[in-house]
Length: 331
Ligand SMILES: [Zn+2]
Ligand SMILES: [Zn+2]
Ligand SMILES: [Zn+2]
Image 1 (cartoon, rainbow, N blue to C red):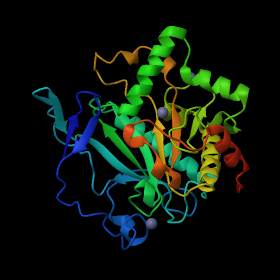
Image 2: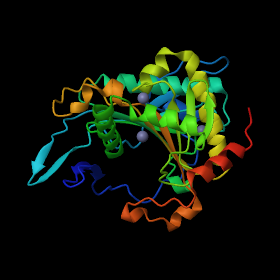
Image 3: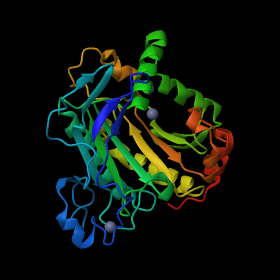
């Protein structure tokens, strides 16, 4: 497998002929709990909770898309760009128990997971080759879930994923024009209008975005400006519990609509990377604002126009937020 860059949109894709591609392998016994757990290549473990050997831990992905060893060998191919898929690919086991998910675990457990995620992102960003670290979760058959155990995944890449790059460029331009963070301005307006706010909890806010890409799309953002999740996640442990609770409650709300969802964390790129032609480093701490995006996968999306890349969401955010607010929440 290798990385190729689309010269028009400038987005990288992973492509190649995968010899092992024959549909998902059936998982007979869970590889992340019970006997299978001891065979994993453990990278990091979060502090033990009482009565458990570990609370959340990071392991090497059994079939990684990116490999830490080797040279990227970035090279031209006529007008094209290609490189080897150098980077890192980890599985974050959210909980030692097979049935404790981010919506039904305790806030302490979710807090352990969030802290581990922050630590892994910080650690991977120390590698100067790495430009961006992604944390994401795909849950449910229609969302491409890979493992039955409660897990998220981390990839560290030598490029910034396209959507994040759009956000970084837009944030920088907005800041250059207004000397304000576009996300802070969104938060202020959403709190003032109170039409699309799902829930506010301590320093965090869950909102349905003004222009959703899919029905019930929901973002979780810190109300106070902060470009980097991993910094906040480590330095202010008290906030972690609020974030854990809001994440848990928001996922419960989303699950009242559909089981399947994608979740992705958007945080600032690595500032250690010595690249000179990326001009957003100078104002990055002021112009970018970390957030979590949750994209539920609902049945009606089958009719969507996404293949034209114009998003079509047959439920407005104003309606979505009413349903999400009314959802029955436990805890
Ligand atoms: Zn399991
Ligand atoms: Zn901000
Ligand atoms: Zn985003």
